Figure 1 (cartoon, rainbow, N blue to C red):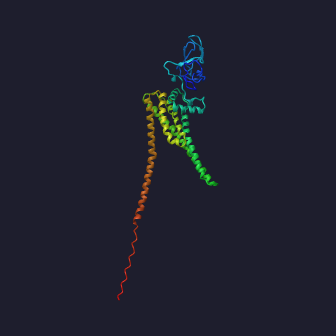
Figure 2 (figure 1 turned 180 degrees about the horizontal axis):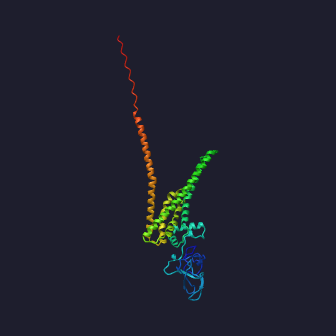
Figure 3 (figure 1 turned 30 degrees about the horizontal axis):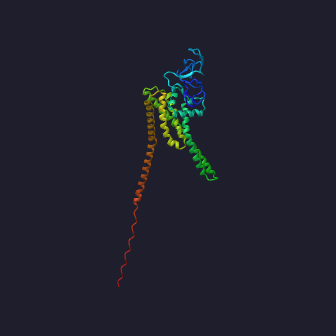
Length: 344
């Protein structure tokens, strides 16, 4: 239990203001894991445990069974239960799943946890009941792809309109048609990017689940899939127009795999080695399949087209060569014979 303002630990503190920053707090403002916190009588320190859905004692006010003093949640002293670390007592929730927060704050907090605190995010995923990792992933993909698409549309729009002669109706109509075609192309590109991101994360998460189960780890889909979906948040660095998709995607990809491995270790209670294997093996497999598909469907057809064009050009050159070789240079005209000299 830490101060929401400065992060100072508030366990074993009798007051209801943070000793570090002076901010007021109440135990009811926090959620704890069941039986992970002792709620102690302020008189004799008799411990009680939280058993309701928020990890708080029920009822909130009662008489102490040891000293008879009035115990109230607002005045009780809180401390971690024996064997529970402070950072394990509080029930962490994925910010994206907290409907009490505005959409923007939910998104930004989840991005921050994924990029900086993936272990905490993994612990929150372990206790999550599910709340839309697919929607979060689609939002991340849109944030990453839309700025570049808009930048391309604006840039090409300026070029198209600038090339229209003043007063030319046909030129203006042609420019509008070009802009419409570019806009449709940008929209299609964004759709392809979203499908590629979601499909890639689904594939990696599925293979990671298989690897963990083979390794003997209890890895349910409801934990592995959110671990990969939420930690894909580093893709937001690709939102930098034009530069992001070319340079940021490599940084974001590595960042995502590292964060996913850490979150997976927390959410599925996997060892570091198994979590690393569950991230690296699927990533290599998916990249290998993507490279194979690129070679099979792009490189090989392009190579075949180049060879066919080269062969056609060579055949055309061979047809022209004999005709050119059959031509002969004209023979020079014979020199006239000298006239015979007349005798005297």
